[in-house]
Length: 335
Image (tube, rainbow, N blue to C red):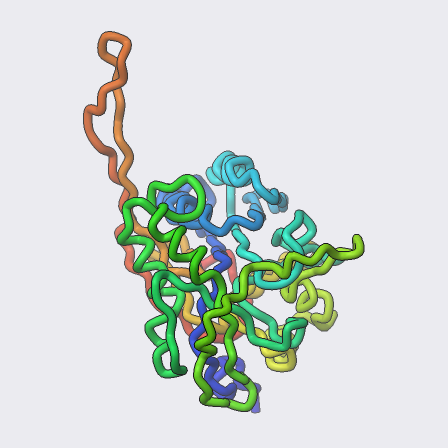
């Protein structure tokens, strides 16, 4: 009897606001693909809002794999991706908001150990030194009881930001109003015991846990839980072995694992994620609800002065679909 790899046998996790952003896109055509490129490019503005590092992996049609990483220069990483897109077969991008580990280049995804590359949006509680499942982020409100957290998911957050013109046009972070609210609330520690299903209330104390402890380490790098997950991953790479590892470590979120030697790509889904595809030429998988439209002003100079002469709209026709949870070996063709 085959093992159930759809995670239907695992206990349901509480909704968590997992702030890093991750996508992986596949171009099924052996030529430049505008749909594929737009489904990637349109996400750049919202992915910039995670401020603790940006990383990308591009595999071109010749099979060459390139990695781009920066702690702060997102424009450089995105620019490299844009240059590679016309020849790309696979593109994966991650932007980080710290929940564990130091804020430094070493903790910018994609991590590499040996022949493996890994990026992750989420938490791995086994490797959280705080003993808690992680943090949640507030935008002007917070839940007080477990049943309230359904309205406090990442999807809800994205809806708030997507409806705020100031947040959408901000070059970094959020608009002044939401920045003020987020600074006031910062990160709220999750007081639930995930394994034992405790139904307790979220802490209501006014003391707010701010990102980072403020303590200086001794020079030794504190790696994130995502790095530790990769470090302890069994050498044998199969859907079953990865599945067992996510159960053992209480993995939550979305993960992308690439093997440089074998060319295998595994997609790990353990949260609400979204797929976008025309079922013909491309497929993209997101840890967040993707942006489908973008408007930009068209300028032309008159008398030496730029005038706005209209707007250009880029729109994705396909609609995102919620994904099944599980461990999947990702194919780069439709066959």
